[in-house]
Image (spheres, rainbow, N blue to C red):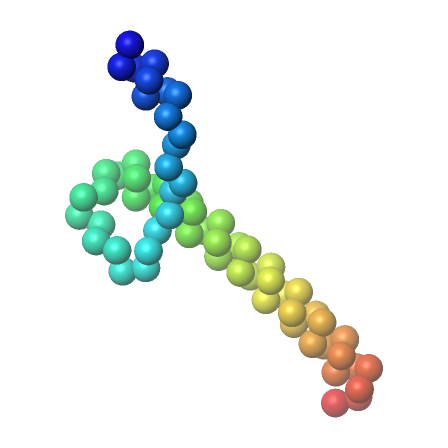
Length: 64
């Protein structure tokens, strides 16, 4: 019955804090965090590209 109870519990959201101690993490957990950080880098790069495009459009409009 304990296994069924574990399956019903909500899963913890995976997060990573910069500088966090990694000694207690398994290889699989480290791989999950690497994936999480890669997704965040992709998201940040997309936001940067969008802001750069907006800035370039504004510069052209105002002829800077």
